[in-house]
Image (cartoon, rainbow, N blue to C red; front, side, top):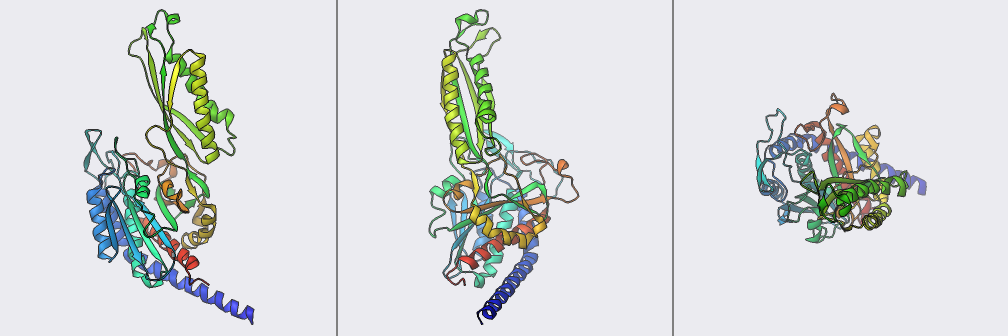
Length: 435
C-alpha cells in the first residue's frame, strides 16, 4: 500500500512539474518580444556606473506596472522589487547588473548606442559592452512571468537591479558591496540568490556552471619603492629603485609558479603599471608598481597576501631600499563562490530547462564579479548563459569590453526560463508545504 501511495505521489509531483514547466514556457514565448524590446532600449541608452538614473526609472516603471513593491535609490541608483505570494516560504533573490562601460560601439545595429557620459572628467562614449542590457531585460521578463504565476509561489521573490558592477567612479563607492551594506539581503531576509551572466563566447542555448570558486577574487595592490637618487653615470652612489623593482616583479611571479600547488590553486599575480624616473641619466628616488591578484580559493588568497608582504620587504631590504605595500589598494572583490550543495540541488532544474547536452560543467575563470558579495552572506549560484550566434566560430566572436561586443537576442529566452524555474523549484522544495 505504501509503495502504491508513494508511486501515486511521485506521479502527481511529476505531472505538477510538467504542467509548471509548460506554463513557464508558454509565458516565456509570450514575453520574449518584450524582453527583446527592453534589451534594445537599454542597449541604445546605456549609462555609466552610479549614473544609471534613466535606466533605473525605466525598470522601476515596469516593475510598478506589475503591482510589485518597488524601492529605488538603493546604493545610489539601484532598484529592488519584492513579489509576495502571500504564502509562507523562502525568499529567493534574482540579480541583474545595470551599468555600461566607457567603450565606443562599432556595431552596425539599428539600436546601437550613440550615448556619451563623463568618466574621469572627460566626455566618453558609453556602450553595454558586457551584456548588462540582456541581464536587465531577462530579469524583467522573469519578474513578469513570476508575477503571472503568483498563485504557484510559496514565499517571496526579491528582484535586484544593481548599479556599478563594473566599479564605481574614482572617489565613489558602489555596486553589490554597497547594496549589501544598505540591507538588500534583509527585510525580507534572503535565503538564496541566483544570477546569470551572458557570454559572447558560449553558444546560444547553453548554460555553463562550476561548483565552488567559479570566478576569482580580485585584489589590486600598489608597491612604492623608495631609494636614493643619483646621476646615471654614478650608480654606486644610488639606492636604485628601478633595479629593485625589476627584481621584485620577477620574484612576485614565483609566488604562483613556485609556492602554490598550481594543480589545485590557480592564481594570477600581474604588475600592470610601472612609474618611475623622467630622464635617461637620472636614477630616481622612487618607483611605483600597481597590479592585481586573482585567486579562486581562500587558502591561495591568504598565501598570496602573506608572500607578497614577505617578498616586497625582503627584496627591498636586500637592495638597501624601503618599500610600502598597499594590499588591497582601493577595492577588492571576494571569490564568486557557487555553494556546492545549492549547485547540486539546482543542477537538475538547469538540465531540465536547457537540456543535459546544453548544461556544461565549465572551468573557473580568473575574471571577477561582484555577485560574490551576495554569496558571502547567503548561498548563491552564478552561471554563464550562451549568447554567441551558432553560426559564428568561437574564435571570431568579439570579446567582452570591446567596441565589437555582440550577443544574440535569441539567447535571452532561455535565461528567462532558467531564472523563473530556479525560483519555482527552489520554492517548491523549501516551502513549508513541501512534501
